Image (cartoon, rainbow, N blue to C red; front, top):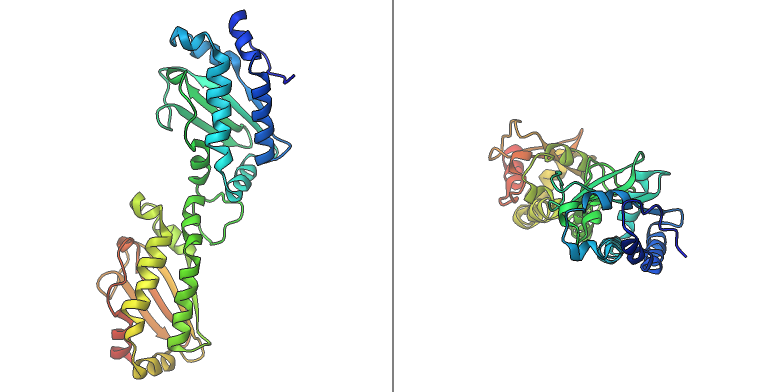
Length: 312
């Protein structure tokens, strides 16, 4: 039989409902270990649940086994942890280090709760993975990807970041989804300018200068950098290069046949439409610096085509 821990604070009849869920508790623990790792343990702070649910509906209080084990712990597994991909699992394990303890506890009804007004997280090496459920929501279910979303929202902690910079895991995932488009952009550059050309995106500068951008843009850099900037560069600019512009661009960069894309600060000075600095030279190749103040806007003109015509 699973070790449910100290059930101090509950009446005998209530304890019986908890004990009746022992096999379900054990199944939840095994599912968590199967997903997160065999070294994980699970603790329910029964005393805090007893203290902070004391004023809940009597129908809920009559069956804490159901409303804590089934509606919180089991639903945490089914609706949240089971939906984590390997990147999220690895990142959670990285954050907690050796303290692989998942603790579900309960807080006061009048407390402050960051997630849907009902849940707080403390996830670090000191706390392990601690979930604090509001006593005001005792009787409700853990019915969303609260933990998954929380882990994916933390900046700079991804276990296996594919791109440099202070990105959240959720943001990195949007970039990864557009990786094939990014490769197509580089292929288009090679097809137009020459097979020896390459594309280098300074993802760290993009992360740095867009950190305080509108959340609707920042949450999807895959779209707003790869689709709306780089792919639009190909469609609305590079494709307009004629043979003379291609030849001139190659002469300007000499042997440095690389396109460098980076972001600059919102307060910077930008010569092209107040949003872009362009340069083509033998030291750095082709450099495009986009203003963070225009993050979310598309590359919607033949900026570099005109640059070559004016500077070659």
